[in-house]
Image (cartoon, rainbow, N blue to C red):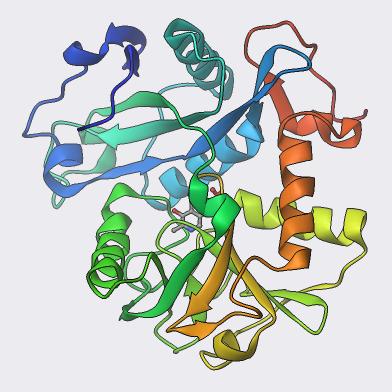
Length: 318
Ligand SMILES: Cc1ncc(COP(=O)(O)O)c(C=O)c1O
């Protein structure tokens, strides 16, 4: 059954789920022409508050993607934040939330109209989404037979709806072969990322992740973890190309992303990763991440935006 929510924010208004419709002739529907974000909000039992995680960074990335697409988003950052908060409040969520602000091209003809001749709109979807079983148990992975979108063709750096045709091909192919989440190599044959998350592995106590030039999305979780692992765990993190065969001999590996959070990888192409179960450093990284996103680490409060107003917003200086 399709997931649903009580409300959707569509072009400036909160509308009931059933009324959030769009014409079939829009570029968004016809060609997947949109730029979007996937964000999470985390519930704190202690504070009885819901916190958006690194919302400002997500909106900055939305604007970067829109810039490359020559798309003008018709709302300010403050209006977008207000809209996200209004939607989540209207849905009365008091638990984990996954939400997606989407800027879309509407009526027009993308192939020959100038961007300013096509109406640009925005909608936001918000769903209740607790942490999945995969985060606790880990997943099986494989090297996809599909390559990640190239920066020279359909840049992975833009979080555009149409890029997810590539993700879907990889996902479905992996699922049909009995794996849970694939790893895509880029055109150069180096590890890029998962269909909806970045990739990190551990070798000899060092965390290694592909660079932002490896045809990956410039992930906010990846950036967050690089900072946290170095500062809080004192573990070295290296950004460098990763060969396919390194996947088979690494000690630990995991996907990271707003949606997938920190999802351990237990095997790749039926080679066990380490002991074939979530590794000890991965577990420490998970704990740190969940402490930070739920507000339990005061040092990182500036990454959190309260939804209901019971907690006060921290300034970047705190
Ligand atoms: C293709 C892809 N890579 C990486 C990520 C991780 O990005 P972030 O950490 O900003 O959610 C996502 C998730 O949204 C994604 O879809």
